[in-house]
Image (tube, rainbow, N blue to C red; front, side, top):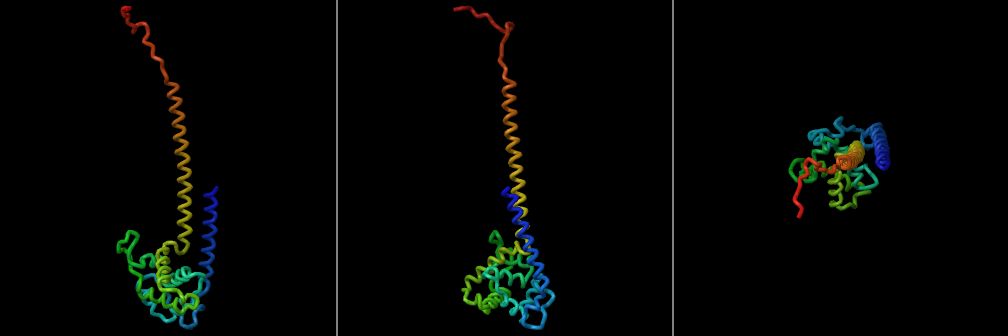
Length: 209
């Protein structure tokens, strides 16, 4: 019952995320900017080349600094999603190192995109007081969590939960099988208990002492 409750919560969270994404897609970005010049069609960037072109646009800074979520971490995540898609973000890490501390990704720290986010936050009245170390930490967390963007967190939790359900059911089946085998073994032991009697043909006469 606990696992079914977790599944229900995950489905509800996914529905809310889909509704939020749908609402955002219905509002063009140009309507949130203070300039009449629309952004390039490559918003958000799908490639490194598109990202380089996007961060050079003045209206991109205006759009980023207008983001005002309730926390610094959430604000940075929204900014990151404005700049790049999930597949592109997953190619970056703050240091350029992957999960095993190997240089398998592109270094984001002090890159033009990273500096643009830092500048946009410094121009945002709600986060201009944040120390650079806190901003760097928020960017690092956003990159690390890029794998969960666009509803993938809910999917991952759903599959993890389903795996737990399968493992739980499998464990019960194995336990039942073990218990059944133990019962069968006991039955076999009782049923095959034999009292050996050599019989008169195998008895030998020994002289009495």
